[in-house]
Length: 430
Image (tube, rainbow, N blue to C red; front, side, top):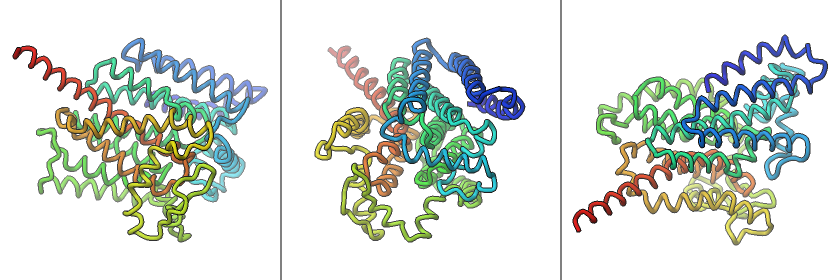
């Protein structure tokens, strides 16, 4: 990601000088797209371990680029591109035309991000969506690197990377003007650096893991609870035994991280917890957990009025959040398509992961994989409480998909290894 960030910063500086030289904005945009597409190809070539992996990266990029053009030139991509994307764009333009409105926009961090982006590159929506496309492809690259760090065979890496690269929600969310791809990229980086830290115990890996997660939280406050999961893992993991070690000597490490991370969170609480601040100020915390608006709403009438209801209904709301629309909810062809193209993946991976969870202790990196699953479950509970319709659910659970995908792929591999070894021993005994 570092080369891409350097290029983005340089282009932002140069665009202030170069953009006025173009006769039309279309020529400027086309030139930027062409140059960056070539640079991206070089980046992907350098990042790919094998030719098949490079082909996955490139194909994923081209499909997303095509869908971006469809969304901009033909029709808004269903089901996510619509009111929200237009509102983000308009607020970004508002900041571009009047930077003093930076703190006045009502849609939070992503509108402000777009405002800064437009100030740097001009009010070109296509460039903002193209940036999302690049982030989507980078997230695929980082996921593949995480799988390689886990010492999975290349054919496992190719399959899991292919699933993530061509997963329906990734293809639909990356090319449009929403914050979801920024959030997903931060999550993928967090998972990568969790594994890196488990292997190298470096302060840099620890820092980047927290940074990735805080960036994701900045664009969606619902992820904030996951910071506690990271604090526990990074404080109590023992590199010598490769296991969690909840001994008193580790408390000092916990306190140091709590002070540092707590200071950062406190300093940026208005950004990290913007959504929660808004709902608490307006007395909407529990009513937000009874949200059932929209044609694809589920659990209608299930009212959350206090903490006891939260605890009582959390498992059910999490299940609906992760796996809806269930067959009894199917009321249109779209519902059926969403189930088989999206929900079925979560259902299958979750069931298989639970069935084979016992094999996790056989993996040398089992602790980090376990905490990926804990991070997945904790966030699924929080998002489940705050989500009440299928359309919103499929957007938010995509952010958590890499956690489940990486954990399941690793469990599947270690299970195969254990069973294969057992069969080999039986043959030798005979």
